[in-house]
Image (cartoon, rainbow, N blue to C red):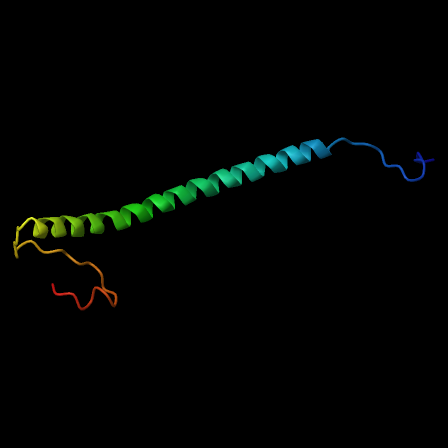
Length: 88
């Protein structure tokens, strides 16, 4: 005859702390990966914008100092609506 449990009781297995701990570890690993990818993306965006801005600032500073050299031109790589009409 099978063993009968008293009404409204369930045998204790105590696996819930292990499941919670594993879930927390998985969440922390996913958050760490997401933060790392976000930081790499932010770094990429900063570098992509920094170089053209520094080039333009150098050109403006040289013009402000009186160095008018028409041979030095800002190279424009854009093929969108803003970069297309720019003289090459």
